Image (cartoon, rainbow, N blue to C red; front, side):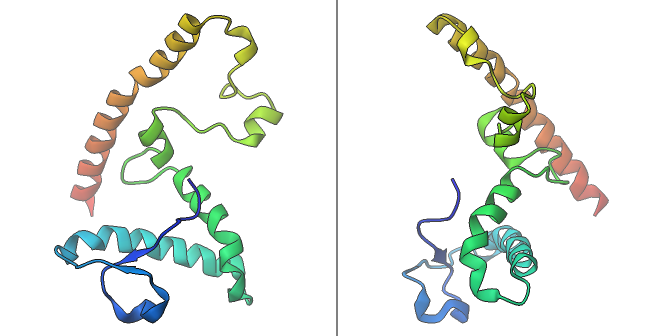
Length: 142
């Protein structure tokens, strides 16, 4: 994860000839959610770059990471958490030995490793249900 390797657009002229791959917009309304998310990323990049807009490539990986490890109001979860069924372990978690940093040296068998991973994943379905419920409730209040 991080910076995209390929950018696909819906045929809009805003990128002009800089785009290598264009798709047919079969359902343009489905692109709305993605484009709203991209607007947030773009706005964050503009703030990070300040006066020097040419440095957006430098900040894109940071903004992308910040996006997937930030709780979304609509779901109440981090996108990373919904994807992997656990909270992300960041360098700060390892340096300060937070509860997220698993002490791998204490896991001595494959069975213990599988048990720990299964316990982490066990809550994933519950998280998805709660996320869907939060999204549904959020939609009612807007």
